[in-house]
Length: 404
Image 1 (spheres, helix red, strand yellow):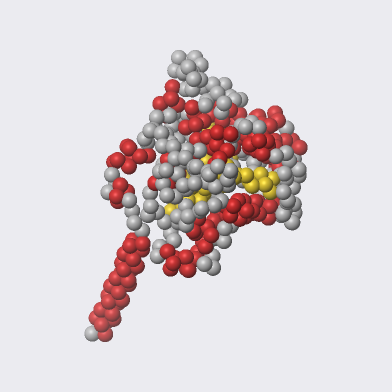
Image 2: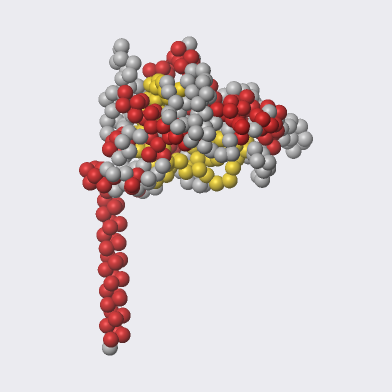
């Protein structure tokens, strides 16, 4: 009899736990509203939204004489802000071209110091003043970092973190007419979110925060694809950025929103439970992470400019700075420690091989799309690959119609 009572008691306990879990799950769902297209898995979302090539060009409209005013786009009440940390300006700023019609404000920080604390020229400022980016100048907020943080030379992570803190606190605070539901994204120089994913964040409500991007990993160029994906936490609303992270971009990147002192207050005020989620998946990329994707001269600059914290610091070794050695790494896909590439070069015709803008401007970005130090792979007949009139592979031309 006692055994039966004991079993009955355990059954009631299990039933109670299940009921509590179900009620908690139901309460969580009530905080998250899904768009009709997502809730019903409508094919229109895939065929007519994600892969629709029709131009969508919301415009920011600054008032005359007020260059800091960046207005809401016509297509959404949620402007999207994308700060970019300082790096080699000419190498990274192609994202301004293929995200320019969906991003309403680019907050770009440039310093006259490298991450190692050495002086460097202000290349991006020069490009802004000489008219290189005149067509999109009204969307760019330039942030000048004129000092190197104390202790940054001894501990490179201090300099690395301070950059993102200064970028957001000085830059975003200068933007006017920000709304709480404006979308904020902060990326490193080697991270490129897919245009369609960014557009989704602008046009749809109901997603939770913070959010991340599953990115395709590459080394030296998109031709050396790395296994797996990189999940990069890089975005939230301006409301969460201010209330939870204290307008500090490095706190957002660290993923630890649940340890922030105002975490619960923000949930209670907004009525939404903060749950991190990701655009894309390990099988469907939502962006690209291209490490060391420069010319040999650009890689040399990155080596000698690297912060003093990510060890080993390969720029300290003279043989690693040799341009011929760097060209050999690009050719083989090897690493500075002597390890060799274990996977064959990526197929240029694969889905999400590279951003569409780069594919359309093949000649300009050829060093990122084709390995410049390897012989071109032969066709079945043994000849060189035939390129179309624009210099692109036929497979890439087909890919342009499907990739975002």
